[in-house]
Image (cartoon, rainbow over all chains, first blue to last red):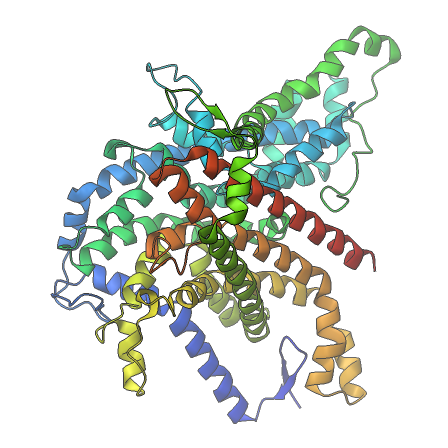
Length: 290
Length: 312
């Protein structure tokens, strides 16, 4: 007899069609529930038909790009630019800072290492949303070097609070510990210092872990809402998240335009996920620290 | 906090000869701190300073430009007697526990259904995972549209086809919180699924075969092999779910702003409206500080419990 194993070790003889039909039906149900809504979003965003409030398309009727164009003029373009600026700069800083810290934690023995680790991990108990209002007050006290004001209503205010994050430090530290010490020893005998060892030996080997951190960092930064809501006070600094929700308040807009704006916000994160999917699972379990 | 990083680094790079080491002693001692400095600066300024500053401001009436007024513990006594805050705490509790349980159950069901190395299962897992990587704002916009209360709302239309509804969903105080929870579960269940899938993959398949030979039923195998094998990973899912629940803000702010009639007000949306809309930043800081204390206590309790489970 031939079997197909499943999660529970339930083994089903191939011949039993009833069970297979049930399984296929369950698959279909799951896809309808979890993917169906995205499909209606895309279909409605590209539909030219006039929908009643709350109505969505299952298939684009009178396909058009007008919704997208209209959304673009209502600030989606500027929002996308701001979001891309924030995500590129914040992610670069986050990864740089985390890699440097992880190198010290994974490779150096020094007095106070345990306490540093504890301090970094303690931040996992301070979710951004919970300390958002005090963060906003702190940003108001830090002078902005480029203007007279504070970091409120500036790119610095949108970016800097996202730089220090325990998750990538943790993932990278764990990964660097698995790199054989012999490589480093050989370089040190040749007279290489910490900095050249870090750049020439450790960093090039950290690719997979950096991939993991990049995916998680991107999604975390792309999802920011309360921080920009507090920090960005003029529309020219609105991130895409804020633009999309501000369209909600204009009653005269059709569902198509609002969902087209949401689509622009959706696409980058889906692309990042699909392209860097192989890095995902490692971070998922590390993310469980949160 | 044993699980955080497995152990202190045992191996040190190279052992320089003693003479060289003495000469470079201070540099060697300084070097790790130079590598750590940027991260510690970022965390110190934007995590610890706000925490401490928020706790400090909790004792003041915060008045920008006018100078802060010392209130003692007035903000805290006010919070304890505030009926709106009390209902916000209640909603946060209901939201956290319900969303957590449903998301674990559905995530576990999905994991059982979609676990396995086959190509089509992997494809399905990728598809089902989409809600997790989607920004919460998109999720809120999308479901806000789909759950439109009238008979033209898509979900109501589907329910109408089978003779149900129309339901008011987010627009009625009786169903708004439940609707928000359903949306949260839609986004978080696939996350739990993927963690459970990783857990299921770690269970020894031979145990199932042995049990099958002994004539154990599917239910017995689930109870005696699968669930005990998943216990460590379940503690992870729980910890994640609790923190997810305590920090909930975006979906509620976007979908209902805490309404209708305050029925979806949670602690953070309430702190936001107290601080930003009513301009009472001292009171908002007091609420945030108390929520932070609760979060820290709950996280430590869960971690203690997790260590116990893992030690077993």
